[in-house]
Image (cartoon, rainbow, N blue to C red; front, side):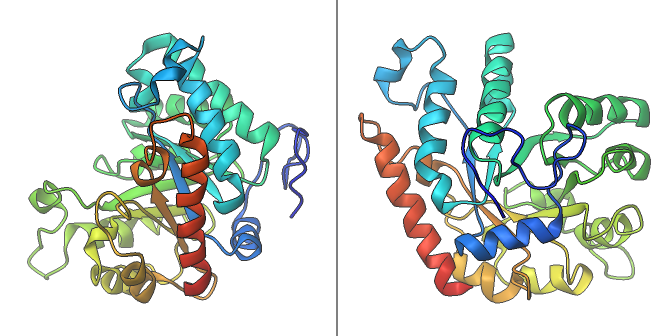
Amino acid sequence: MPAHKNCSTSRPGRRGGTIIMNRQELVSEIKKKKSFLCVGLDTDLKKVPEHLLKEEDPIFAFNKAIVDATAPYCVAYKPNLAFYEAFGVKGIMAFEKTVEYIKKNYPEQFIIADAKRGDIGNTSQMYARTFFGEYDVDALTVAPYMGEDSVTPFLEGYEGKWVILLALTSNKGSFDFQLTEDKEGERLFEKVIRRSQEWGNDDNMMYVVGATRGEMFKDIRKVAPKAFLLVPGVGAQGGSLEEVCKYGMIEDCGLLVNSSRAIIYADKTERFAEVAAEKAKEVQEQMAALL
C-alpha cells in the first residue's frame, strides 16, 4: 500500500475525489506496520506543553507534531470532536486542518471522527454529509439508541466509509443499560450488535468495545465473529492489550486499539513529540509480538 508523503492523491482507493479505505486496505496496513494502534487526538489545551500556547493555532500545532512523531507506529487517528467543538469555530478549523494534514501527508492512515452522532433519519443524513461528504473521514462513531433509521443514513451513499457503533463501553454507567438482559437472557449490547448486522456488514460497520471488559470479548465474538472492533481503554484507563488480543483478535486482526492520553500527554516539555513517538513505538512492538 503506497504511502507517499505530500501527495494528496496517493491515498489508496481514491476515486473521483472521494477517499476509500476498505477492509482489505486496512488489514494490509496493519500487516505492513505490524500494528493495530489508533492514536486518539483528544487535544486539551490545559494539557498541551505550555510553549505551544504561543502558536497561532495551538491545537493544530500539537496535533501536527504528534502525528509526525507517531505515524510510523500506528494505522489510525481518532480525533474526539468534543475537544474541538469546545473551542467553537477555531476548534472546528483545527479539526479540519488536522484531518487535511493527515490525508495529505500520511494517506495510508485511517481517520475516525469520534463524534458519537445518531438522530432521526433526516438529521443523521446531515451528520453523514458533514463527516463523510465535507470532512471526508473514513469512519464515524455512532450511537445506536434510536435504532435502524438513525444509523442507516450513514451507510447509504458513502462507498468505503465506516460506521462504528457504540456496543459495550468501559465507563461505569455502561451497567445502567448495556448489560441489562431481556427475558431470553440476551444483553442489550448483544442485541445491538446482532440487530445492527441486518443494516450493515463487516466491510462497513465496526463496534466500540471497551478494553477494560477483558473476557467479554469472547461474548462479542460469538455475535460478531468477523467484525472489526474499535477498542478504547488501553493505557491510561488500565485495559490489558494481552486480554483484548487473547479474546478479541481474529485471523485478519479485526482490532483497532486506541490509546490517547498515555501517548499524547506522556511528556509536557519541548520533547513531547519525541516521547509520544517512544510510547507509540512501545505499543507497536507489543502489538507486533501479539500479531
